[in-house]
Image (cartoon, rainbow, N blue to C red; front, top):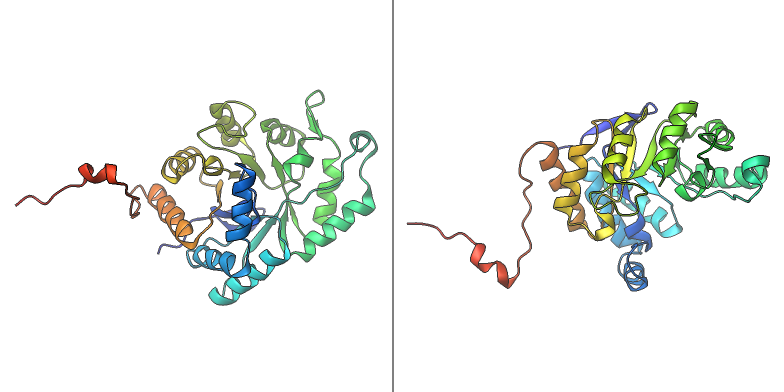
Length: 287
Protein backbone atom coordinates (compact mmCIF):
# COMPACT_ATOMS: atom_id res chain seq x y z
CA UNK A 1 0.00 0.00 0.00
CA UNK A 2 1.17 3.53 -0.78
CA UNK A 3 2.62 5.46 2.16
CA UNK A 4 0.00 7.99 3.20
CA UNK A 5 0.80 11.63 2.28
CA UNK A 6 2.29 13.85 4.97
CA UNK A 7 2.40 17.50 5.98
CA UNK A 8 4.54 19.53 8.37
CA UNK A 9 3.04 21.28 11.39
CA UNK A 10 5.20 23.30 13.75
CA UNK A 11 8.29 21.57 12.38
CA UNK A 12 6.82 18.09 12.96
CA UNK A 13 6.03 15.70 10.09
CA UNK A 14 2.49 14.33 10.43
CA UNK A 15 0.39 12.00 8.32
CA UNK A 16 -2.43 13.92 6.62
CA UNK A 17 -4.85 11.32 7.92
CA UNK A 18 -5.17 11.37 11.70
CA UNK A 19 -6.49 8.50 13.81
CA UNK A 20 -9.49 9.62 15.86
CA UNK A 21 -10.17 8.12 19.27
CA UNK A 22 -13.92 8.70 19.79
CA UNK A 23 -14.79 5.33 18.29
CA UNK A 24 -12.31 3.66 20.66
CA UNK A 25 -13.57 5.36 23.82
CA UNK A 26 -17.34 5.28 23.39
CA UNK A 27 -18.25 8.74 22.10
CA UNK A 28 -20.63 8.03 19.22
CA UNK A 29 -22.53 11.35 19.11
CA UNK A 30 -25.50 9.12 18.31
CA UNK A 31 -27.22 7.34 21.21
CA UNK A 32 -26.43 5.97 24.65
CA UNK A 33 -26.94 2.50 23.21
CA UNK A 34 -24.31 3.15 20.53
CA UNK A 35 -21.89 4.47 23.15
CA UNK A 36 -22.45 1.32 25.21
CA UNK A 37 -21.87 -0.89 22.16
CA UNK A 38 -18.54 0.77 21.41
CA UNK A 39 -17.40 0.31 25.00
CA UNK A 40 -18.44 -3.35 24.97
CA UNK A 41 -17.11 -4.27 21.52
CA UNK A 42 -14.13 -1.97 20.88
CA UNK A 43 -12.78 -0.62 24.17
CA UNK A 44 -10.19 -3.31 24.83
CA UNK A 45 -6.46 -3.46 24.21
CA UNK A 46 -6.41 -6.10 21.47
CA UNK A 47 -9.26 -4.62 19.41
CA UNK A 48 -7.76 -1.14 19.43
CA UNK A 49 -4.21 -2.39 18.81
CA UNK A 50 -5.39 -4.32 15.73
CA UNK A 51 -6.95 -1.14 14.29
CA UNK A 52 -3.88 0.95 15.09
CA UNK A 53 -1.64 -1.58 13.34
CA UNK A 54 -3.56 -1.10 10.09
CA UNK A 55 -3.10 2.66 10.27
CA UNK A 56 0.59 2.45 11.16
CA UNK A 57 1.40 0.01 8.34
CA UNK A 58 -0.13 2.51 5.91
CA UNK A 59 1.96 5.38 7.27
CA UNK A 60 -0.89 6.94 9.26
CA UNK A 61 1.05 7.56 12.45
CA UNK A 62 -0.75 10.54 14.00
CA UNK A 63 -3.48 10.12 16.64
CA UNK A 64 -5.73 12.71 18.27
CA UNK A 65 -7.74 12.80 21.50
CA UNK A 66 -7.33 11.56 25.03
CA UNK A 67 -5.55 8.49 26.33
CA UNK A 68 -6.81 6.16 29.02
CA UNK A 69 -4.88 3.13 30.34
CA UNK A 70 -6.45 0.74 27.82
CA UNK A 71 -5.67 3.00 24.87
CA UNK A 72 -2.12 3.58 26.13
CA UNK A 73 -1.55 -0.19 26.28
CA UNK A 74 -3.00 -0.63 22.78
CA UNK A 75 -0.73 2.08 21.40
CA UNK A 76 2.34 0.36 22.86
CA UNK A 77 1.27 -3.01 21.46
CA UNK A 78 0.70 -1.60 17.97
CA UNK A 79 3.97 0.37 18.01
CA UNK A 80 5.92 -2.74 19.02
CA UNK A 81 4.23 -4.87 16.34
CA UNK A 82 4.89 -2.43 13.51
CA UNK A 83 8.11 -0.81 14.69
CA UNK A 84 6.74 2.70 14.27
CA UNK A 85 5.82 5.33 16.86
CA UNK A 86 2.50 7.14 17.05
CA UNK A 87 2.60 10.94 17.18
CA UNK A 88 0.04 11.91 19.81
CA UNK A 89 -2.06 15.08 19.52
CA UNK A 90 -3.62 15.60 22.96
CA UNK A 91 -6.84 17.59 23.50
CA UNK A 92 -6.98 17.99 27.29
CA UNK A 93 -9.50 19.97 29.30
CA UNK A 94 -8.59 22.67 31.83
CA UNK A 95 -10.62 24.13 34.71
CA UNK A 96 -12.54 27.23 33.60
CA UNK A 97 -14.66 29.25 36.02
CA UNK A 98 -16.59 32.50 35.61
CA UNK A 99 -13.49 34.32 36.90
CA UNK A 100 -11.03 32.73 34.47
CA UNK A 101 -11.53 35.20 31.57
CA UNK A 102 -10.69 38.20 33.78
CA UNK A 103 -8.52 36.81 36.58
CA UNK A 104 -6.68 34.02 34.78
CA UNK A 105 -6.05 30.34 35.34
CA UNK A 106 -5.68 28.26 38.45
CA UNK A 107 -1.99 27.83 37.68
CA UNK A 108 -1.45 24.82 39.91
CA UNK A 109 -4.31 22.88 38.34
CA UNK A 110 -3.28 23.86 34.81
CA UNK A 111 0.28 22.73 35.46
CA UNK A 112 -1.00 19.42 36.82
CA UNK A 113 -3.00 18.79 33.64
CA UNK A 114 -0.06 19.79 31.44
CA UNK A 115 2.34 17.54 33.33
CA UNK A 116 -0.08 14.63 32.84
CA UNK A 117 -0.29 15.50 29.15
CA UNK A 118 3.50 15.38 28.85
CA UNK A 119 3.45 12.07 30.70
CA UNK A 120 1.00 10.68 28.12
CA UNK A 121 3.60 11.19 25.40
CA UNK A 122 1.86 14.10 23.68
CA UNK A 123 3.80 15.96 21.00
CA UNK A 124 0.97 18.47 20.44
CA UNK A 125 -1.23 19.97 23.17
CA UNK A 126 -4.47 21.52 21.89
CA UNK A 127 -6.95 22.64 24.56
CA UNK A 128 -10.30 21.04 23.82
CA UNK A 129 -13.07 23.05 22.16
CA UNK A 130 -15.07 23.18 25.38
CA UNK A 131 -12.21 25.26 26.83
CA UNK A 132 -11.28 27.34 23.80
CA UNK A 133 -14.82 28.32 22.93
CA UNK A 134 -15.77 29.29 26.49
CA UNK A 135 -12.98 31.86 26.42
CA UNK A 136 -13.85 33.20 22.97
CA UNK A 137 -14.67 36.91 23.20
CA UNK A 138 -16.51 38.13 20.11
CA UNK A 139 -16.48 41.72 21.36
CA UNK A 140 -12.71 42.06 21.71
CA UNK A 141 -12.00 39.44 19.00
CA UNK A 142 -9.64 37.40 21.16
CA UNK A 143 -9.47 34.16 23.11
CA UNK A 144 -9.05 35.31 26.69
CA UNK A 145 -6.08 33.93 28.70
CA UNK A 146 -5.09 31.51 25.92
CA UNK A 147 -1.69 33.17 25.47
CA UNK A 148 -0.78 32.13 29.02
CA UNK A 149 -1.79 28.54 28.33
CA UNK A 150 0.18 28.44 25.08
CA UNK A 151 3.28 29.70 26.90
CA UNK A 152 2.99 26.96 29.52
CA UNK A 153 2.57 24.36 26.78
CA UNK A 154 5.72 25.59 25.03
CA UNK A 155 7.66 25.53 28.28
CA UNK A 156 6.98 21.79 28.54
CA UNK A 157 8.30 21.09 25.06
CA UNK A 158 4.92 20.47 23.42
CA UNK A 159 3.59 22.17 20.30
CA UNK A 160 0.57 24.41 21.07
CA UNK A 161 -2.60 24.44 19.00
CA UNK A 162 -6.31 25.10 19.45
CA UNK A 163 -9.30 22.81 19.20
CA UNK A 164 -12.53 24.65 18.43
CA UNK A 165 -16.11 24.24 17.28
CA UNK A 166 -16.36 27.95 16.53
CA UNK A 167 -14.76 29.26 13.32
CA UNK A 168 -14.20 32.64 14.99
CA UNK A 169 -11.55 31.04 17.21
CA UNK A 170 -9.36 30.43 14.17
CA UNK A 171 -9.88 33.95 12.83
CA UNK A 172 -9.22 35.70 16.15
CA UNK A 173 -6.16 33.56 16.90
CA UNK A 174 -4.76 34.53 13.51
CA UNK A 175 -5.59 38.21 14.03
CA UNK A 176 -3.98 38.40 17.47
CA UNK A 177 -0.90 36.36 16.52
CA UNK A 178 -1.60 33.73 19.17
CA UNK A 179 1.33 31.33 19.53
CA UNK A 180 -0.27 28.23 18.03
CA UNK A 181 0.87 26.05 15.13
CA UNK A 182 -2.40 24.42 14.10
CA UNK A 183 -6.15 24.29 14.63
CA UNK A 184 -8.73 21.53 15.06
CA UNK A 185 -12.05 22.33 13.34
CA UNK A 186 -15.25 20.38 12.68
CA UNK A 187 -15.81 20.03 8.94
CA UNK A 188 -18.23 17.80 7.06
CA UNK A 189 -20.64 18.05 4.12
CA UNK A 190 -23.65 17.67 6.41
CA UNK A 191 -22.82 20.63 8.64
CA UNK A 192 -23.03 18.29 11.65
CA UNK A 193 -22.09 20.13 14.89
CA UNK A 194 -20.94 23.14 12.86
CA UNK A 195 -21.94 26.62 14.05
CA UNK A 196 -22.42 28.14 10.59
CA UNK A 197 -22.92 27.06 6.99
CA UNK A 198 -20.48 24.60 5.48
CA UNK A 199 -19.22 27.03 2.83
CA UNK A 200 -18.33 29.59 5.53
CA UNK A 201 -16.36 26.99 7.46
CA UNK A 202 -14.61 25.99 4.23
CA UNK A 203 -13.61 29.64 3.74
CA UNK A 204 -12.30 29.85 7.30
CA UNK A 205 -10.15 26.75 6.83
CA UNK A 206 -8.92 27.89 3.43
CA UNK A 207 -7.83 31.27 4.81
CA UNK A 208 -6.32 30.01 8.10
CA UNK A 209 -2.71 31.04 8.60
CA UNK A 210 -1.83 27.64 10.06
CA UNK A 211 -2.64 24.06 8.96
CA UNK A 212 -6.03 22.77 10.08
CA UNK A 213 -6.83 19.32 11.46
CA UNK A 214 -10.42 18.67 10.40
CA UNK A 215 -12.60 16.34 12.47
CA UNK A 216 -15.90 14.49 12.00
CA UNK A 217 -15.66 14.19 8.18
CA UNK A 218 -18.37 11.51 8.25
CA UNK A 219 -20.57 13.37 10.73
CA UNK A 220 -20.04 10.69 13.39
CA UNK A 221 -21.35 7.95 11.12
CA UNK A 222 -24.23 9.89 9.60
CA UNK A 223 -22.43 10.24 6.26
CA UNK A 224 -21.13 7.24 4.36
CA UNK A 225 -17.32 7.18 3.99
CA UNK A 226 -17.44 7.71 0.21
CA UNK A 227 -19.48 10.91 0.48
CA UNK A 228 -17.83 12.23 3.62
CA UNK A 229 -14.22 11.66 2.63
CA UNK A 230 -14.68 12.74 -0.99
CA UNK A 231 -16.06 16.10 0.13
CA UNK A 232 -13.45 16.88 2.77
CA UNK A 233 -10.33 15.78 0.88
CA UNK A 234 -11.41 17.77 -2.17
CA UNK A 235 -12.13 21.02 -0.31
CA UNK A 236 -9.15 21.39 2.06
CA UNK A 237 -5.60 22.51 1.31
CA UNK A 238 -2.55 20.28 0.86
CA UNK A 239 -1.27 21.22 4.34
CA UNK A 240 -4.55 20.34 6.08
CA UNK A 241 -5.52 17.01 7.66
CA UNK A 242 -8.54 14.74 8.12
CA UNK A 243 -9.27 12.84 11.32
CA UNK A 244 -10.96 9.46 10.90
CA UNK A 245 -12.43 7.17 13.55
CA UNK A 246 -13.06 3.47 12.95
CA UNK A 247 -14.24 0.49 15.00
CA UNK A 248 -12.58 -2.39 13.11
CA UNK A 249 -9.34 -3.02 11.18
CA UNK A 250 -11.31 -3.48 7.96
CA UNK A 251 -13.00 -0.10 8.39
CA UNK A 252 -9.55 1.43 8.79
CA UNK A 253 -8.38 -0.28 5.58
CA UNK A 254 -11.40 1.00 3.68
CA UNK A 255 -11.01 4.60 4.87
CA UNK A 256 -7.31 4.58 4.00
CA UNK A 257 -7.87 3.13 0.51
CA UNK A 258 -10.82 5.43 -0.21
CA UNK A 259 -8.74 8.44 0.85
CA UNK A 260 -5.72 7.42 -1.21
CA UNK A 261 -7.97 6.93 -4.23
CA UNK A 262 -9.45 10.41 -3.77
CA UNK A 263 -6.05 12.05 -3.34
CA UNK A 264 -4.55 10.15 -6.30
CA UNK A 265 -7.57 10.88 -8.53
CA UNK A 266 -8.44 7.23 -9.02
CA UNK A 267 -11.22 4.92 -7.94
CA UNK A 268 -10.54 3.41 -4.55
CA UNK A 269 -10.29 -0.37 -4.66
CA UNK A 270 -13.12 -0.98 -2.21
CA UNK A 271 -15.54 -3.89 -2.39
CA UNK A 272 -19.01 -2.40 -2.01
CA UNK A 273 -21.53 -3.80 0.44
CA UNK A 274 -24.39 -5.72 -1.12
CA UNK A 275 -28.09 -6.24 -0.48
CA UNK A 276 -30.65 -8.26 -2.41
CA UNK A 277 -32.00 -5.12 -4.07
CA UNK A 278 -28.66 -4.55 -5.81
CA UNK A 279 -28.84 -7.80 -7.75
CA UNK A 280 -30.17 -6.05 -10.87
CA UNK A 281 -27.17 -3.69 -10.90
CA UNK A 282 -24.61 -6.41 -11.44
CA UNK A 283 -23.14 -6.57 -14.91
CA UNK A 284 -23.18 -9.86 -16.76
CA UNK A 285 -20.45 -10.93 -19.13
CA UNK A 286 -21.44 -10.59 -22.76
CA UNK A 287 -20.38 -13.40 -25.10
